[in-house]
Image (cartoon, helix red, strand yellow):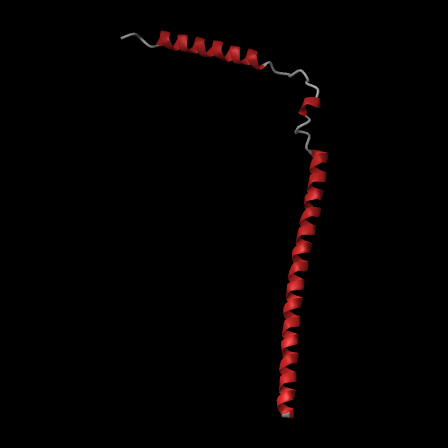
Length: 98
């Protein structure tokens, strides 16, 4: 009987150590997940802070003062249209009519 009781006690001890190991694994997993989330949050906050310093395009564009441009795009388009018309007229003159 004594050996049987000793064996039951040993089995119970093995079961508790096995349970303790599983609990530690679960705790370690939860700890790792929390650490990953915290690191991700901090990394995101850091990237956002740096982006705010460097990026000037966004929802506050209306605050930017408009400056005069060096090129007048409308004038350039008009010039290109005139040149294209002149080239097509010159091309028509070169091609004999059939």
